[in-house]
Amino acid sequence: MKIVFYLDEFLPPSQTFVKTQIDEFIAQKHSVYIVAQRLTLFEPYDVYTLFEEGSFEYRVKKRLNKLGLFTFPSFLSGKKLKKVIEKIDPEVIICQFGINAIDLYKAKVTVPVFTFMQGYDASKLPYLYADYRKVLSDISNHKNFKLFFVSEYLKNVCKKHISDIKGEVFYFGIPVHVIKGNSDKGVSDEIKILQISRLIEKKGIFLTLGAIKILSGILPKEIKCKLDIVGDGPIKEDIIKMILEYGISKYVCLQGNLSYDQTLDLLADTDIYMQPSIIAKDGDSEGLSNSVLEAMTANKYIVTTEFTGIQEIIEHKDFPVSVCEPDAHVLANELFDIIIKNKYFVKNQQMRDFMLANFNISDRVNNLVRYIETYKKK
Image 1 (cartoon, one colour):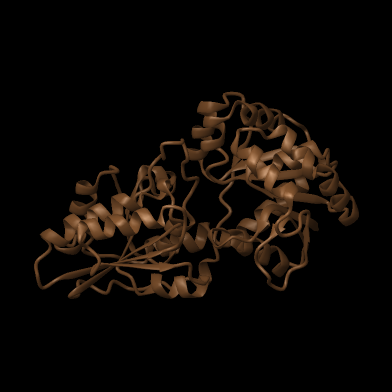
Image 2 (cartoon, rainbow, N blue to C red):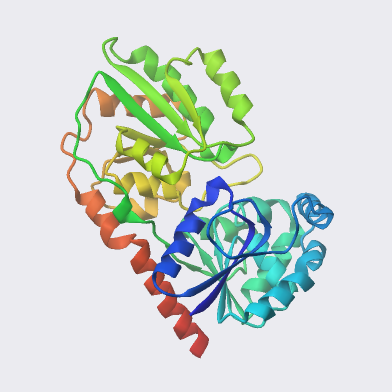
């Protein structure tokens, strides 16, 4: 199958999941072309870019988006985009994020477009902007466009803002076989806690730091805790300030952006994975956290909240996953119970086996290809 992946930029560090998807389609012998508005990652991919680095048009387009305008800015890339799509002549277009689907809609592409709603595009943008709500509703009702939400949770969030939105839930999966699973290491004299996320409000990092501050004060002196945070983002300076104010510098290490392999190595060596996501003040919400899915595959203890979309995955399953209130004291007590009370005394391979069986990206891509082929015949 001849496929175009359409993106805003290729590729920010926070979107390694897109690279994973592209690599899997290529591994399955599909012809994959990448079309991006701008290029930020130089890897062995053929990428068609619509705007040059520092392009005035691109800056204007993004500025107008920030002002809540989406229909007109898409015309800035529409002609270029349509020309590139016609040159490639794909059978199908896979679009990441609803905001990019608007470009394809305004460019009046004639091939089927499958758009994956990931998070902010189904929560923050429809919460804030009437223009976005209108055009996304039109797109979801267009015969040539199909919306997929990465979780039922995210779909429900979007429907609160766009009641007539149409779309289905599709779990894309992760590269489960490259993620090491481990047996329970038991309690040691240093408990390693990990969070992997972009440094933005909805990831709940301030809650994580608050929980570590409380936990460091209630753990027995012979047991130390260490928190690694992998990622970068706009609230980094606020995070550093909070670490200093809380006096927890000796417990926290900001790793910055790491390669995927380095991140997985850190995950393999950790005891507890933590991601207390929240709904941000601007309405931004998770779709389904790939990092939590990766931690589940690695068979880690997990402390999270209902706002990661993970509840629909673990419902009624006896997995070592704690879904807590987004409160630092609640999170600290849960960490304490896992470490000291050994809340999950026996941790077997059931969670990893479940992930291998249900979230293998190879199987999920096969399912998507079958869906697309059926859809095209309608």
